[in-house]
Image 1: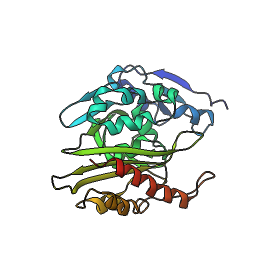
Image 2 (image 1 turned 30 degrees about the horizontal axis):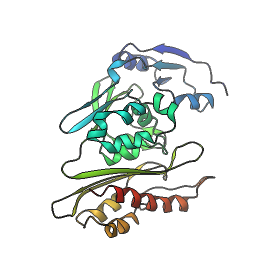
Image 3 (image 1 turned 90 degrees about the vertical axis):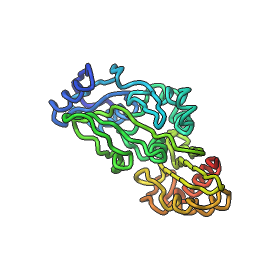
Image 4 (image 1 turned 60 degrees about the horizontal axis):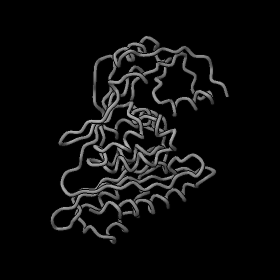
Length: 285
């Protein structure tokens, strides 16, 4: 299909993008990589009067690492994340998940900030962002503020992003001590989206007990979610296969599930348990 007619403006800076969004009073959309927005435009599921292109803003690109966190600019592509030596060293879980996003074209054009701002319930990054306690930095009319990923994604294609806000960067804290992460995904055979994707982070103490566990699940439910029941069943227990097997049975305890032509709600519940077990097994330090 052909999109509805729209005007086009190119932002010269982040502040300029905020100003343009504010001036159009909710009638504008941000264009970054375009892999989420353009299909919606073509299907006329959204019909903004103006597209504001931020693709040329170098201040929104790049990857930096400190002692405690890795910061990824909002316009950094999935391919850049997947191939970054810094991320491979500091947060290999994030690089692993980025390699599984879409196809080559999507990874080369799609952006980290755009993916999270779009909040597709079947996208890969929300699971990893939840498991790593990511924090988004937004810039709006009143300046910059930070919001945890758990408070940012509110529902399918619904976020806490204000009408005049721009995602600037995403901070991924580096887990402490002896830890490991893994991302396991059952991709839809046509789209590559996650029918179920599970990101797991486990940290073990000196006695071989699990001292920290974080599990994010995407694709299966209406909204990506932290599997808190799984985490509770892991913490303080021996880091072994039996602990993981029992904990993974709780992977469907919190999501709001629904079915479609490809997979029923019950099948998605089953897949949550299977892929949680696989991700946790690989995340054993």
